Image 1 (cartoon, rainbow, N blue to C red):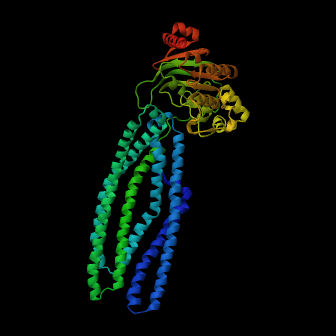
Image 2 (image 1 turned 45 degrees about the vertical axis):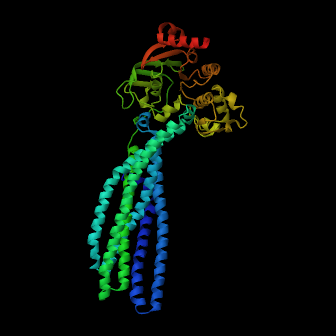
Image 3 (image 1 turned 30 degrees about the horizontal axis):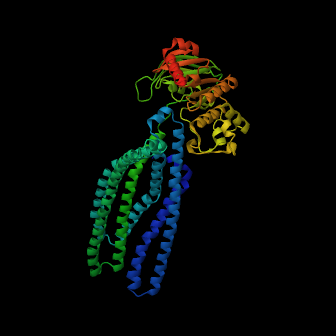
Length: 573
């Protein structure tokens, strides 16, 4: 928690006022049993109605003050607790945004979502409880114990037995609860993972008619979560009767021994009533503390998971004196090797490649030949394990990361559009872009031909994930969005696979005419998408198999020739 306390700074006044008001509420609650005893032992015993009314009015005032202090304390506690959780959640979100691809590979998306939602909510709830219940319970217990001792010290000896028993029970139960709550959070991750996977791929599930299979998978994880939840709840269920047995046993003992003292005249009836009330307050405080500690254990599991994210630093480190500008769009790979985090197998092996500024380079190869991995090293989505990637005559590790990525437009294989309007999505490329600039980019990407048909044009609504567009339309829109960055390097990672060959040819022709000073790297599965490139790189199992022009590779590269011939047969058929 020490690492998280700085996030409370914004809400410190609420965090301070809440426990202070809670202590004032405790004072009011403590006063009421004492006043009640005075009514019984003095007012009623002496038939003094005026005294009864006077003390009764003071009791009502104390109760009103207790309610007022309690309500305001609850409000301040909620502001501090959930405000604190909000600041922590914002910090987590910022940390995740700064993660490298290697960091994101380490944590599952479902786990990150659970940490941002469930874990932060738990943290907020327990913080609020810490400011209220964790203050109220011990103060109530201490002051009630003092009042009980003041009324009858000999009768207070019952606590010598009841309190140690309560402590032992709490220690036993809490020691068993912690591992259960850790498992509970992990199993929430597993349930979230399958929900996310299923809902994202719901069309695939339905097309393969696998609803029953998916329901069984979900049932297994859901039942696993239910089992661990029931085991955790069973501890609370067991705790309640044990605490009640101790509380009522203590009250019975007080009634027995106190009743004898009342009969003997050494203790007033009102004092016995207030003594029992103080006993109830003391033991109920223990019960409140037990529930607080149960929640605290759950929160400790959440805090561990939250701090793990905060302490995870991006593997992409920025130079202390970074280069802010790219001189040009040239790219050089020198003896580059790479393997994914957690793997010892090299995905890229001894890559040596020079790409001139303004050149169009096509990359082709079989599935799994590490084409995408190669280009992801250029904007430092990953860092090399060995060797150097040079962009604009500087090692990519020397650049300011934002400046580097602002100059490298990357259109990934998965085409993601965000909910909003077409204009909103296009401005991801340039938030200050005018409509004329957006339309020009859409025309270059051959997207204006369908966007122009919408009555609302650039204000056309984009549903979440761009589900109201076809695959080819989404690809063209994401290309247009990348072009708005006015980059020095643009990378198209199989970004025209869903586009027909005629439209693909138009895109390549537009690029050639309009972007002749921009380094263009095109990863494709179709030879037709790259055969007009200045050069074509053929990848095979993480290595450079061949490099040259289309005509040269048809002669020198068996892999390229095989791909070309198989696609030509497909076209001919």
